[in-house]
Length: 170
Picture 1: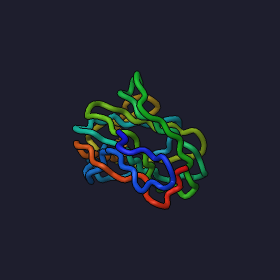
Picture 2: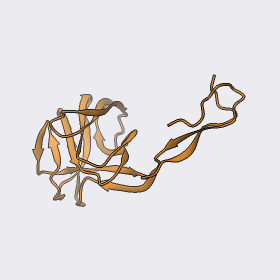
Picture 3: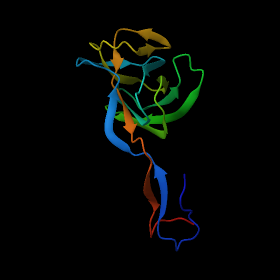
Picture 4: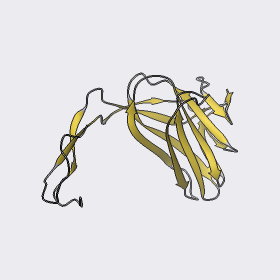
């Protein structure tokens, strides 16, 4: 909800109400033995946050060539509803963390899916995890869980500045 509105370059500050991250998160695995899994088509992870969340972090493993992936957030592995979608260009070096930030969603059941668009993409997995919430090409697997974090946001909205003197606003 916008409190102020940018109207001219002489305006000082505009505030909006947001739910910032509160440094807590839900990990989608519970083990410690890490490996790299090459994505043939897609991989996904089902998760149930206990409160509002506004960002997903996914650890990408080895990348043999520059590539592109599509990350989507759904209500379940059945994908009846899609909340957000984004494409990412991956560098050849790999070992990066994808960050998909969005307007916070409420607690409930969700499923994120990473689809390989191009290139040879590996994803960091945990092979001794006992949660068994991962999917390969739309099918559940007990072989691993994917190394990702669901970042929680505050329950209450707070005011934050979005434009200050000197920002380009016209």
